Image (cartoon, rainbow, N blue to C red):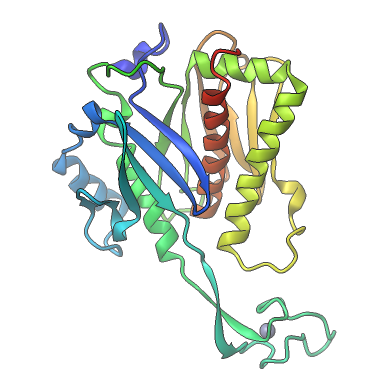
Length: 297
Ligand SMILES: [Zn+2]
């Protein structure tokens, strides 16, 4: 199993993640030699039953789409198949007057901006299903045995950097994200730690990605709200930590130090698909940068 073998040596890339800001979303690249093997209907049936994805349309894996409710859009990307998952908004401004302030935009008593409509006077409707479909589709994708840990090496010239586990369930803390950072990726984190200028560029962009997801999903007039809850940091021993808005919601490594070897990572208090996809977006940005900076670290 190549996931285990990563502990001992570099493994040719079988999948990657990448962040897109226009349109906003997360792309997953799957090496064609692996993509051709992703047919395991028994496992999918098991997952559908276990995680109760019945609210979504049938899971699709066609030439064009992957996932529930056509959440992922496929395209050819050279030796890889790319599946792009656009991030859907949750909050939508309607034409109806806000029922909480009766269309005045103000809280009756204090004359402050109505917190339900953010002072817009219009009712804000909420669609949680579309973003859950993205999370559920990713959780199925990364649980195919050949995605989790392929049997055969691909012919790719680049190395596998991150292996992901994505969980989607309706329980509190049920939108988990974890996985493994390869030795090469951990070396990149060490390099960033010692390269303050570069570190700032990479982490600022990761924070921007998290905020973009948060404020795309939720209608908030005040974009500075919760600003300090989004951060990324790496310590001297290469420990990467990513924090998203919420109650200490974030990603952290499970090892004390990671230099020169693989490092498992896990998450804390990731309750919603927005938090999960926001953290994944930050991770994707750092992954993209690690690829760009290849040869320098
Ligand atoms: Zn209102």
